[in-house]
Length: 260
Image (cartoon, rainbow, N blue to C red):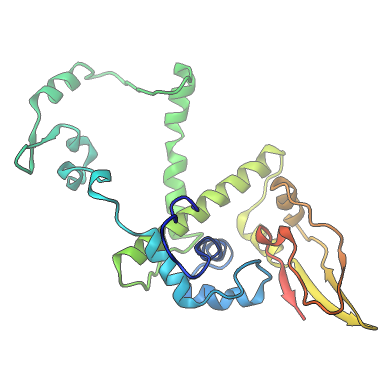
């Protein structure tokens, strides 16, 4: 992301704005306005100075259209991919049916052909192709589990950014669940989300000393934290009496609720 932002003069941390939006999609979902309010309940490093218009601008940046040389040609306007592959772009604009492509494709009538540039065996390649139903399931999850809709943005750029963050949240969710399953554990996301949401921190001051006390992990929260490779550290941390409570490095990836 730092490379993509080179030459752009944003006065706020775009990475933190995207991080906050994606984290909100995972745990609560909703609009950017809801995310701006939601973050106040949590200790998330680097988002303290973010405002609502920063989130909107981050979404707009994510949704900026590609340059013309990076976009597909006129054939991309045809929604059916099965038909689109038999078209070619005319020199003067538009497109037409490509008879050569039709003739080449006719050689495979009645056969199931898969082409790949990977080093997978024929069996593994076929199995991977049949796993595409999982991808379809993930897109259904965008509408249900992560509640991508409704979308309140009005500009195309911010709408694309909104959907992008939902998809990124979905990828992170899939990766976390895959790591958990690799350890032989089976969890249900909504219950796991509630367990992670129950992880809290309480700031206590006594006799001029400041402490931060973390609650114990409940349910499947510990499994998720282990699978992600996170060390929560001590349940009780001593802070400097003249310094405000500081967030730990793990708080970026954990739902650590801050209470005073």
